[in-house]
Length: 183
Image (cartoon, rainbow, N blue to C red; front, side, top):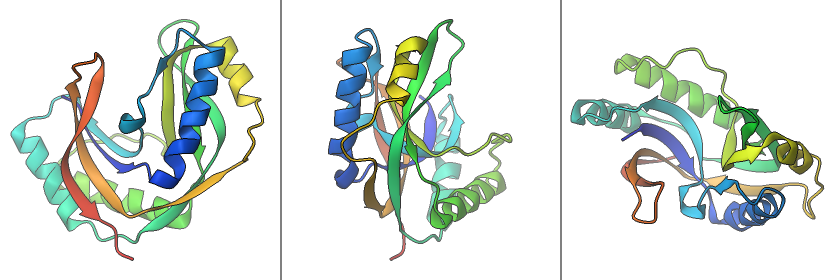
């Protein structure tokens, strides 16, 4: 089981992301589309081994978190290359607002205090929509103009998730702890 802390996708954005995902499926039929209920905005990936001790430390960090709620905006698509030749991950870009940057940094500091080695990866806020997308299709997708150029919604909580095998195949994300953001 992998552990990560993320913002669940607000209802105001979920339908719009489904429209993006449908277009990805049309242009890249062999892609693995992220199920609606699995979409999230990752704040910190904690590792692939989820021991009870790691879950307790992550929960303690989340319990100590004091952060404001915020609104975020999703604008367009992008993609990351993967180790698999010719494949990539397609994602929806999340505009980074001050409150989101502050939340991310506060969480990283608390997780490091709890002994998590998070590395020095750059924070690029996004929502993964599909994996195993051919790069040529990904390039076509990022050039598309959608009816609405952006979607705006409020985020009011942060969750600790664990990945578990799904009966339908792939994985599902189980909520292990939740922290409300302050209004």
